[in-house]
Amino acid sequence: MKQLISACLLVCANLAGAYASAQTLEATDAIARASIPGAPNSAAFMTLSNTSASDISLVSVKSDVAKRPELHGHINDNGVMRMRQRESIVIPAGGQVVLKPGGLHVMLLGLTDRLMPGGQVQLTLIDEAGQEYPVTAEVVDMRQHTGVSSKQGAMKGHNMKGHNH
Amino acid sequence: MKRALVWALSGLMAVALGFWGSQWLPSPHNQRQLVLTDMDGQVFDSLERLKGEPYVVTFGYTYCPDVCPTTLAYLAQVLDVYETQSGTKLEALFVSVDPERDTPDRLAQYVAYFDADMTALTGSAEQLKQAAQSFSVYFQKVDGTRGDDYLVDHSAGVLVLNGAHQLVGVIRDNAPLDDALAELAKASP
Image (cartoon, rainbow over all chains, first blue to last red):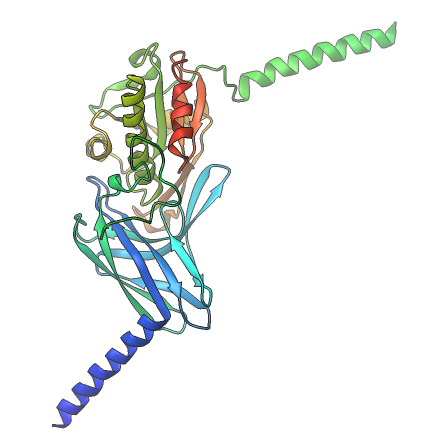
């Protein structure tokens, strides 16, 4: 009985935790790039919305799909793309940050398995207080996500919109 | 009289300096050349293999987690649209600046994923240095403290060359399709 209660407490605590994180940080349009033959690394992108009244500073990421999942950003230095690990990605209170190709992204260095289109990748974003935010990213073939959507012209806006998940 | 001589000499020096400088500074009129190794392990000299043909080239590496796949996927589609619209199929080259990890075999698999007709090249450190100089691009290995696990900074974008192998255009990353097509059109005026 005692065990049952403690098990229940644990589940309840987990549910509460999940609820709290779902409330404060929402990830939408989360995608991970399907593996390219010959390439051992990939990346994940998403739009993060902070619905809370305080800034959220993400400092790390966990995932089973890569040996080294990291938060990364690019610095465009006169046309040279210098990709670097970020100490943090701050999502301002009530604000949004977009992780997209060529910008901020979750780096998946050293994939443990090939990422196949149609699959899913579980990521856990972690803020400086240790709060965890689970994210499910759909694995997509980036060849269909180039922004060159038709013969008529380039797609307006950034290429994270209008995906079918 | 003396003053005129000084002026004449300065003028001569300026011309000489200008000429000397033009040998080193990247000039759009310079013919660009790649001498590297192709996916079959054969020497690839762009001046011979692509003689008189316009082409596009981009530099990167297969371990590149974000920029290179984005660029190549985009380039493949842009080339496709260009071919449909103009009836001209442009040769496309991908130069790996990471010969330590990018074997010809790995490169062949990698580029075929984006474009079955794309040619992947790499070479010795010295060959790559010369290629980078010829095309005025930059690359530098970073984060090399973890053995085989490192990144390479490199110039992004796609370079467009005409039939005389002069650099005539650059497609920046995420350029709108119309801009990219305009750059490609410069290859075959």
